[in-house]
Image (cartoon, rainbow, N blue to C red; front, side):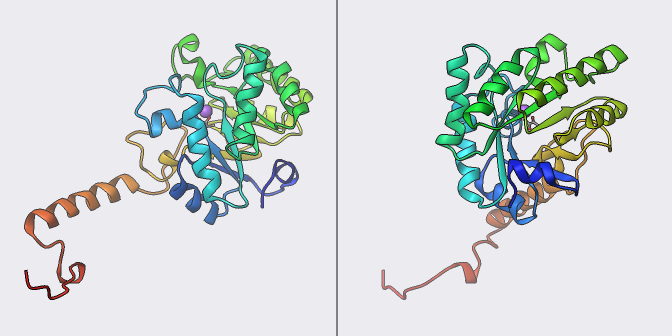
Length: 265
Ligand code: KIV
Ligand code: NA
């Protein structure tokens, strides 16, 4: 059983994977992963978009519904998608609240910056735990000009550390830190008490997160900082081809897949 409280106390490295559907969530929970993130990466991973920008509240809510139905005791955190927060405070609170109230998530993740400190405090006060997200924030792809490494100068690294501290002070229960030099991963982890979950942030954070499609080897390509621990893509392709061949050759359905009632027709 993991909660926002238990992962703060956890000594062992915190393991986080994304999931967007029931079948995957069930497997992730069965493997004792601590946290399931219903990431807006579902836009790339399952909806065929080339960024996370088109992802809607309905997209993440539907995925969260599926994940929470399929799991019992894993902490489920859902991403607030692009422009579902930060435009109007009331709308931000309602959108975040919907993910807990209707979809059963226990917390939300927000791509963070100076503009999300107050929102983090407000949400936390209302009982909506917030996971902050600093370093590379993919919803800012157009402002950044690509999915590039962040915090690569001492000045920029110091900004990330300041923002991590500000979000902790605002009540964030943990932080995702993405695509930064490993020394930044280490420095941020040392600067704050809340657990820091790294992705492309080196080995010194309190935990790691990967997109499930990358982790199992389903993605066509993975970012340089991710790793595939399986080859589901090859497995699936071979199974699909084997099915096609079996149907075309007539070997499927075989005797054991067919049933006769002995009807005289
Ligand atoms: O959307 C996502 O999956 C994420 C993780 C990669 C941290 O934000
Ligand atoms: Na995300």
